[in-house]
Image 1 (cartoon, one colour):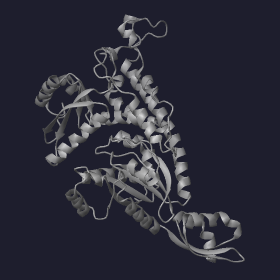
Image 2 (image 1 turned 90 degrees about the horizontal axis):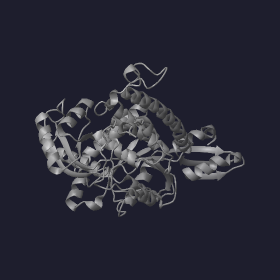
Image 3 (image 1 turned 30 degrees about the vertical axis):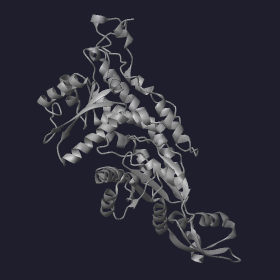
Image 4 (image 1 turned 180 degrees about the horizontal axis):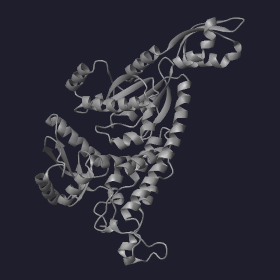
Length: 490
C-alpha cells in the first residue's frame, strides 16, 4: 500500500467518530464519582518523544495532534506589564492543562497585532531562533489568529502554530464527558476549523475526475471536487447534524430546568472563573462528590444537587462551566444551552479565586459572559453574591486588602471549611428575601399544596377549621402563584 493510499481517509468522518457514548451525566449522588473521574482522566498519558511525521495530512487531523514542547508568544497592546505577564501565566497554565511542556515565553509590545504574522516579521525570525534553541515543536499565541496569520507565522517558524482559541478547544475536547458536552465541543471545533481548513503540499488539490487520471470509470470523470471542498462540505453536514442534536438535548435540559423552577425551591447557580474552586465549594455545600482538579476547565458538564440550609430551607445548587478571559465565541455559542442554567437562577453565587493576582479581571470576564447570555435570553439578571474562595492561600495583608476592596463579599475556603457557616447564613438571608407572605385557606382536599408550603416555605401561623387549613406563611414566588386561588379566603 502506498503512502498516499494509506492516508486517504475522510477528516470529517474521523471527527464524527469522536462523539462517543457518554460515560456519565453528572447526576450521581455517589461522593466517589469525582475521584473515579479523576482516575479516568489520569489513566491515559502521552509518552514523550514518540511521534510519527506525516507527509500527507489535512488541517483537521493536524489541529487535533497532541501538543508537546511549546513556546508561548503574546502581543501586549494595552494594560500594565503585570496584566500582560498574568495573561501569559494563564496561557502557560492552559498549555500545561492540555498536556504540554512550556519551554519559554515571549511578549511583544505593539499598538496592535501585526496583520501578517501577528508579532511582525522581525520578531517572527527571532521566535524561529528561540524555537531552534529550545527544540520546541509548537508555538502557542496568546490571541485568536486569522487563517492568514496562522499560515504566515508557520512558514517562518517552521513548526505548528496554535492560537489561544485552539488551545482552549483542545482542553474542552479532553475534559468533556457527557454526550451533550462532547457534541458542543465538536461543534465548536468544527466552527473554528472550517475557515482554517487547508493541507500540505498538493494533497488538497486532488480531484475526483479528469482525463489525466481517469481511474474512476464511467460516470465518474470530470472536474470533480477537490479534497478540501469535499472536507468542507462534509464538515458542514456534520455541523448541521450536531446542531440538531444539541437542540434536542436543549429541549430535555429546558424541561428539567422548568420542573425545578416550578417546584418553588430556590435555584442557585455557581458561576466563576475557571479553577476558582466552584466544584470544591459545591462539594463543601452539598457533599456532591464532583470531580475536583487543580486544572483549568476541569468541569464542563453542569451538575445539580439539592441541599438544606441551616433553617431547613431546601436549595438547588448548579455547578456550571468556568469562564476565562477572551472565551472563544464558538464555545459561548456551542455551550449556550449549558450556560443558560444561569437564566433560571434566583441567585448567582459568583466564586472568585482570592489567590489570583488580578481578581478584578476575573470578575469582569465572568460578568461579560453572563451579561451576554442573559441579553440573548432577554431575562433580567438575577441577584449576585460574590464569594472569595481560597483565603487559606492568602497572607493577612492580602486578605485585608481584599476585604477592603470587596466589602459585600463572603470570604471562604472550600478546602478548609473556613467561612462556610457565614456563607450559608448569607444564602438563607438572601433567599428568604425572595419569599412572599401569603394568607390562604386550603381545603383538606389540597393536602399536596399544604405539604409544599411546609416543605418549601416558613409557617407563620396555622389553624384547622371546618372548611380547611387557614395559614399564613412565607413561600417562594412560584408557590405563591399556585396558591393565588385560595388567597381571597386567607
